[in-house]
Length: 306
Image (cartoon, rainbow, N blue to C red; front, side, top):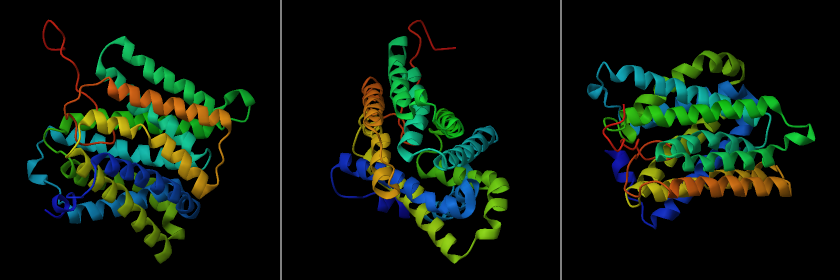
């Protein structure tokens, strides 16, 4: 398989993971001009559609392995990915990239804390929420409520995506899940995306969308899988906590979104709580698909969890 050979990337796995992080956030930053051209739903549809075509070429979807009971979860995964992408890109119209990613990060962070077991783990998403409040600064009366709300929807979608992905992760790991789910997500976003993009599509727009789709999810996926082949899921998840900081940096460099000192403190809190939540999990490789590996539910001491 082409994708398998592409994953033989030399270099330390932590560096590969960090490069993957920057590819994800670079794609988000570079999506802002595309959003201006075709709207957030149009940008989401084009990115997901192009990404689906590229992934199918690299790793044909294992449709023969799909059972009837897999269909609802796979459809749910695709729909969730579509909603998450549209909501996140729509939030970028209203709030800075670093703030949007920090808010969105609350979703997977909460899932990771809940799955780690125990009330103590919930201190991390609560701490991250404090960081998000420092970033959004609602007390100054200028917070963009719509942008924050859309980023929260994206966060719920991201967390839901991880939960659903675990349900099929043992059957459709890595490229298997992605090459099935991406086309579903593209179809789901087409209902809003096509009307937004229809009157504004040209070769330039299609070229930009293809380039963004190549960066994420395709190159992002290859880098993440290459890193995960040589490091634990916990270590990988800890590095993924750097995403809000990467978003803040690229927002500054590419979009000229200058954070305040308070916002810098907020992003540091989000990153530290995200890393702490992952370090509290188990160290063996667990989930090798999805944006943040998380531990499975811990069995009840007296028997399996209901």
